[in-house]
Image (cartoon, rainbow, N blue to C red; front, side):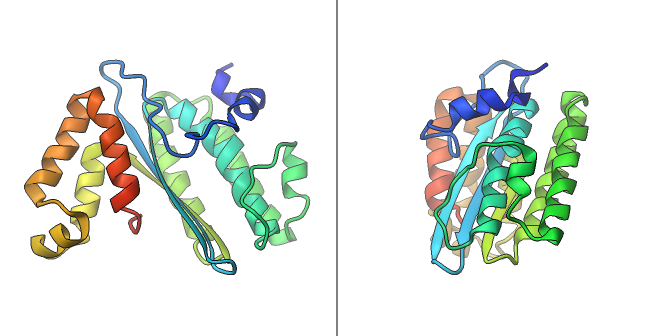
Length: 211
């Protein structure tokens, strides 16, 4: 069984400061970087946080979703005025304080995750991106909103961000780069591991309103 499917592994990782925003890619040749954009917003308290992370193993991203992101989302739904926290416990414990409808939807997501584990990497990644879209859609109107967007490769980020602008001048004003500079940044990340930390830092600091 993959170590990323182990709750014990993720419990040991909870104290890592970069668990939500870091470069978890191994740098092995031939592995496509998987970018994840995470937003946590509490409309009642005014809390907002924005994270970008990078993986190259779909199993590791799936483990993060199952043992870190979803428990945090469920906790926020149950206690929207409380602090952001990732509870540790059984599946039943996670759903205990949710309403019947919230618990029903939560089980749907947990069952989807379980169904993904046996898949090969390519199919798993495709289904993870669909799962992320489903999670974001369900929780986008909650008081404690959790958004999770998956981008398979820096090219996907490139196209998604530029598609939201009708004019390069507006893009440059918001992002701080011309189209050519932005294209180059995305290419350099794909070609050079040393560019990864700069690229992730740029995404977290400048691109926080996209999904």
